[in-house]
Length: 70
Image (cartoon, rainbow, N blue to C red; front, side, top):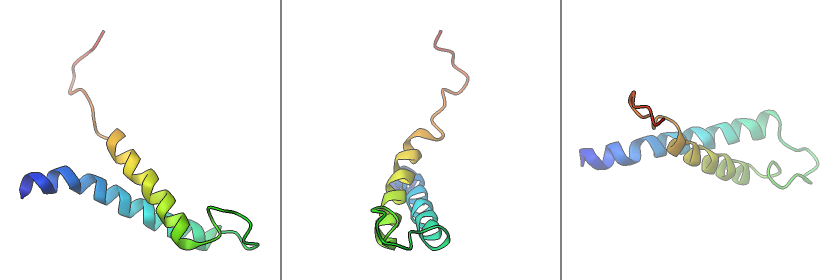
C-alpha cells in the first residue's frame, strides 16, 4: 500500500495542481468569444493543464543523486 502511494502520489498531486491551474486560467484569462479551443470551456482547460501537470511529474525530481555521467 505504501509503495503504491509513493508511486502514484506525485503524479496525482501534479495532475490535480495542473487541473486547478487550468480552472484558474479559465476564470482569470479565458476566452470571451468562444473561438479559442483550449480556453472556451473549463473542463477542456482543466484536462489539458492536468495532462501537462502529469507529464511534468515524470520530469521533476528525477536526479542522479550526485553521479556524473561524463
